[in-house]
Image (cartoon, rainbow, N blue to C red; front, side, top):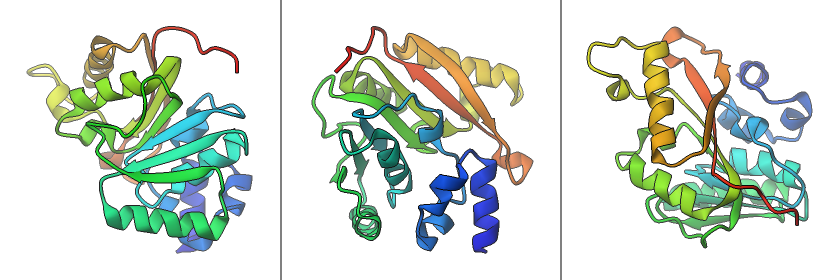
Length: 212
């Protein structure tokens, strides 16, 4: 099972070095979805928030990329998820990661305090997605990125349009309408079966990040 999880991690964008640094438990947990941190423009010293962090897999991967001068904040509404994430943080010893219990509709973060927001299969399934997107724009610095992985919901398709390119185009247009200045598909995630086909979306807030 671990070998299968590792093969899937490589398939969806995890590097061999990243996988080698994961404990077996995280390899199993990460063997699904995608790797938004791999497609984000992360730099040393960046502040990253993971929206719906779960057991903290993507937080711990992002922490390696932003280095000791950066920090990663995982937000999840589930106390069980936060406890699991804290345990995985302890196993890896990631001093630049913290986890906060909270709701994506009201993020426990200050305005313009985040360089990159990532999310693995969470943002598009939120009932109040429009509110979540506004919150992300609030906490992002000018020029900051939102990178997330999921299939555009079927309900976003115009009437009579079958799932496919038109549905994807409609969903990306909705993100632009929400206020993101640049929206693109960063990658198409190869699924284990056609039903689980996903896209990695990269959306940027207007403006430019100031050099620290």
